[in-house]
Image (cartoon, rainbow, N blue to C red):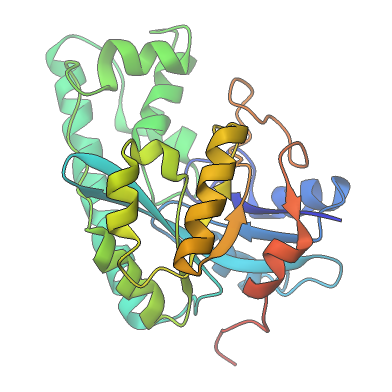
Length: 277
C-alpha cells in the first residue's frame, strides 16, 4: 500500500480541509499520511478536537513544515510524530503567525500604493480558517478579482522578490526548527533538499540533529533521488517522501495518490498520538 508524508490543508495554503484530505487519502488507498501545514499544527489539532484523529482506517502522522532560511537559501524543515500541544512549539507558532499577519498587511499596503484594489477581506475570504496567511492567499485573491489570470502571474507581477509588493518573510533558523521539533518529541526531516539549491549546504545542514531527509519528492528526478538516498545512508538518516499536495489545479500533483512512497518508509514515524488526555 502507498503512503504520503507531505500534505497541506486549508489551515495553511492547501485547498482541501483536513476532513477532505482524509476522504481523499482513503479514496486513494493510502495507508499512512502526514499533515504538514506551514508553520502550524492547527489542521491536525482540528482533526483531534473533532474526534477524527486518530482514525480507524487511516494512519495519521501529526506533522509541520517550518520555513527557515540560511545564507539566502530557503530551507524547509519537516517535523513528524510530534506533540501537537507542546507549549514551546505553540508559542513559536503564535509568533510566526503574528509575523505572517504583519507581512500580509505590508503586502496589501504595497499593492495599494501601486493602485491594485484588493482588500483584507478579499484575502481572508480565500484564507478561510488558516492563520498561516501567505503570498499564495494574496495571489489567489488577485486571480479571483480578475487582476491577474493566474497565480504564477500574480507572483511574477507583484509578489516575487524584486517585484513591487514583495515583503521579506520572517523565518527562523534551521537549527531552531530542529530544536523545536525535537523538544516536542518529534523527528526533524530536511524537506526537498534539491530545492535548497546547494548540496554542500545540504551536507552542512545534516550536521544538525536531523532524523531524516525527504528523498522522494515530485521535483526530484531519478538522479536526485539516488543521490539523496546515498546521503541519507551516509548520515544514518531515515528516508521520507511525499507529494507536497496542496490541491491546486495548476500544481502537480492535483490529486492525492499520484505521488506516493512505500509504507515501510512511513512506519517509523507512526506511534500512538502524542496529545493531551
